[in-house]
Amino acid sequence: MTTMPPPSAWGAADQPGIVENGAEARGPRLRVHGPAKLRGTVSVGGAKNAALPIMAAALLTGESCILRNVPRIDDVETLADVLRALGAIVEFPDPHTAVVTADGITSTCAPADLVRKMRASFLVIGPLLARFGSAATAQPGGCEIGIRPVDVHLEGFRDLGAEMSPDAESYRVKGRRLRGVDLFLDYPSHTGTENLIMAACLAEGQTIIRNACIEPEVVDLVRFLEKMGAHIEGAGSHTITVQGVTALRGCEHEIMPDRLIAGTYLAGAAITRGDVTVEKIIPEHLDAATHKLRKMGARVDATRSTLRCSWETPLRAVDIQAIPYPGFPTDLQAVFGALLTQAQGMSTIVERVFEDRLGYVQELKRMGARIRVDGQKAWVYGPTRLHGASVRALDVRAGAATILTSLVADGETIVEDAHHISRGYEDLVEGLQSLGGDISWVQPIEAI
Ligand code: EPU
Image (tube, rainbow, N blue to C red; front, side, top):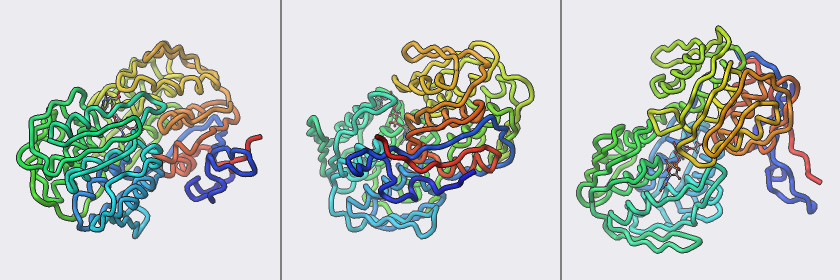
């Protein structure tokens, strides 16, 4: 088995999309040889979806913020580049510690190429607006999983007193002094709630955010803001109250563990008829996923900071609906879609968060999966014997689903566009190797 460094460590010519000799270089690929049985213990690092807003929130002060347990994934590198482009200093004194110092901000305009590369760059708007009275960014646009508008963010900024000048290409938001207000979100948007909390921290007076998102990553952001000196009540409930203050200070914070990576390993144990313990996590964050695993017949044991999933009997079909937390997470929907191909009977999946998040099914079907899709609903028939094939990672989570499927497929699977996986999973390949998976990076080859 060849072990290579992940794509982020490769030279520029190896990166996807680089044009050389008139031909487009293909993205990094993974080779998986199945079937495998995953066994052993893995540790999980910091959560992408907590690290990104928390790094953006460091813009709220000129003092240094020291962030620990930061995942070294491509999305974190992209956000670090966004912050640097604004004039902040971002350093990594060790691989999982970031120090962000935003005392020399030179621009309040997030670079268009980085915003288009990663929608979460939009998270800098709330803090920039709150601290500097203006912010601008390119339209984040749609992506593979849905249209993904930002109206909840913009309506909130407007209600807080900002003026908007959107055009087809960009947004400009201005507001010298934001004023606290009673907000009601039409949808409990995850990053929308985060952007508005950050904006409200330095607004004059009290802001109430109703129908707020209650995902654990929002709570982690609030814990960080409180350490900075913000006054916030109700995080983790649908009503969050923020008392504006005039300034925030630097602080130290440890990013919460990544529940989605943990859920991926647990599903990996069940799909390969294995036995995997995931360490350094908060088991309650995975209640929806572990509930489904148990209903399918897998055994799940919890301690204060670990979850162990072991296969005991043939898995049974279940129905899954992806809805906001504490319901079943959309970010584990694809991974469980893969798992359901090995369950006895007909399972259904309804994706209620994003309108286009079943695209990965086409890739699973290349490996022999029997799945029918109609709009946001899928019917999965199992168990199905799968075979290796050439498949694509369509996005971070779809990529993880193709990997899990290829671990139970007979023979070799090549996962193209595997750079998507490195956006959200640190060392997934190494983690799966340590559990007995035959998986490795393959140098990209040039397309004809
Ligand atoms: N929506 C609106 N208007 C808005 C915002 C959202 O209609 O202004 C709709 C979206 O179109 C979508 C739904 O609301 O249908 C949910 O979107 P939300 O805003 O909650 O998602 P997000 O904040 O853009 C975050 C995560 C996603 C995760 C979702 C749901 C980050 C950086 N991203 O996205 O993570 O799927 O919440 O939990 O936190 C991933 O990690 O792979 C990922 C996509």
